Image 1: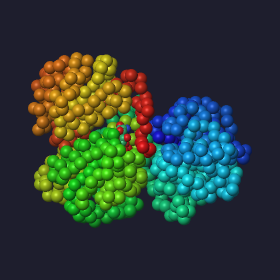
Image 2: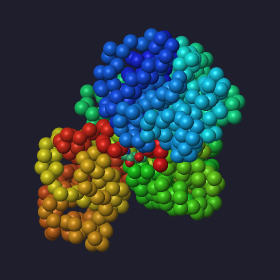
Image 3: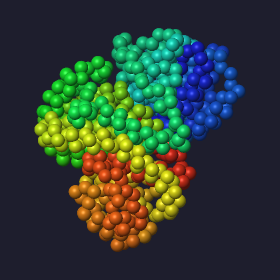
Amino acid sequence: MCGIVGYLGPMNPKDVIVAGLKKLEYRGYDSAGVAILHQGKTKRVRAEGKLKALEEKLQAEPFDGHLGIGHTRWATHGGPSERNAHPHQVRGISLVHNGIIENYADIREALLARGAEISSDTDSELVAHLLAEEVEKTGSLLKSVQNILDRIHGAFSIVAMWDQDPETMVAFKDGPPLVVGLGDNQTFVVSDVQACLQYTKKFIYLDDREVVHVHKNKVQVYSAKGEPLTKKVVEVDWSEEAVEKQGHAHFMLKEIYEQPRSVAAAMEPHLDIDKFKVRLKRVGFNQPLERLEGLDIEADWQNTQKVLKGVERIFMIACGTSNYAAMVGKYLLEKIAKVPVETDIASEFRYRDPVLPPNTLVMTISQSGETADTLAAIRLAKEKGALTLSLCNVRGSSIDREAHGHLYMNSGPEIGVASTKAFTSTLTVLNCFAAAFGQIKGTISPGEEKTYVQALLATPSQLEGVLAYDKYFSETAEVLKTYKGFLYMGRGVSFPIAMEGALKLKELAYLHAEGYAAGEMKHGPLALIDERMAIIMLVPEDGLYEKSMSNLEEARARGGKIIALGTGEDEKLRRVSAEYLPLPKALWTVNPILSVVPLQLMAYHLADNLGYDVDQPRNLAKSVTVE
Ligand code: AGP
């Protein structure tokens, strides 16, 4: 997904925009550019490749203006090239765009019929043509944007400027996030708060089909119909250094090491530690998002209990890693709260016309809170009359704002495209949610609740110990990378962890890996196994230990190299494994939080050993804000 930085203020736009684009590099991109006012005209500089190439071109460029826009492009329409890089410029209009214009073909045809000279293969340039036509009639950038808004369909975030109006920037969105940063005597319009966090912590989150008009020091948001709106100013509490790597080689490794702290931060709001009780806080069912902070905690907990008491079925909807977290959630909720749970990937849920019986809760899980399929899923659930609950990591994100109820991963900004700390934070919150639900439904005793809480409280320090596998995998990666394939297997709550471990290896090291339910071996995967296959077996001490051991033996008998993760000093398991990785003894409910970390480190070190871009794997984006 692309990165956008717009700036109007007294500082040098080049410095502000390039620094902001650097903070957005994690989003994945293949070209970049800026358009900045200079001597009454908008000067544009673009470059294919990474920001370094753009900076080299900008080095000698002087700018005397105070208005500019910048962009890192993740190619959708039109391949990665300088001519397709943003900003796109048509006569006096310059603009940057994140997303896709679905009716671009009709727009292109109509423009060509009107004699437009189209210079790129992108859909974004077409919007610049429409604006250039309008502004020559209206003489106003704001009016021109309002006039074209209904003519473009799809998922878009756009920031535009006009060289005849050096004091104005106009932005609008429908889908991908766009946030207005309110600085002292300066304004930013960015895809992600991190792009300007060093200058301000005050933000306005634009909602779909809203238009923001920045003129000198004045910021006014309008509805699609042109009505002025009063928007809430949100204070973001992420410090600047939280976004930096803190000495690690990659954001991903920093985030893996953050997990003891982020897992603690995930559970902290919901645990009454001296009483070993779970009390979900600030869920705010049916409260406007901005009221969450001010909610009376006791009253909110009473309301949450009342609402959840009426829930008879849960659907958990997500994509990718978040879907594997949902799969763990299914085991937790069904075993602890005895409530039927169905999980589904959002891209299937949104198109299969799901049957949602009365008293259904649809819970979405999304780190970014902007995943297009998951956003569509929550909208569908609401259309079908279901109660919705969002578990995400970004307050004020699109999914967060559309849900009836709100839970947060609280893991801080996750920059690495491959999700790690957000995943374990999600598992932590799902533990709290399942225990709270069991308490509300009366399916667990106070003693059982205490057991779940104590298991959670022990997890952060247990994670500290598991991080020691960082060194182990940095040393074994050289051998591991010689295997032809990797089969990850587990039973029960370890099955989704097997799926997640395989996904990590696929998305980081580009190696063939599959996650499987260990009980499925005889139904096919056994044929895959020979001495060139690495078999990662999750065999924790839980009710399925003996079953998992026999699956391991089946794989071993066919020559597979067994890398087993087990509990404590398990001599029996160590004997039958080529590599044995002991994990701390823990309750089955938190085993997934512990067992996923060695798999994260394994994928990380294989990718690093192979020389791949760990934080920005090829072809992937941190948040898939388009279908
Ligand atoms: C995970 O490592 C991947 N980056 C991807 O599967 C991700 O989990 C998925 O795109 C969902 O993202 P979300 O949690 O932001 O909705």
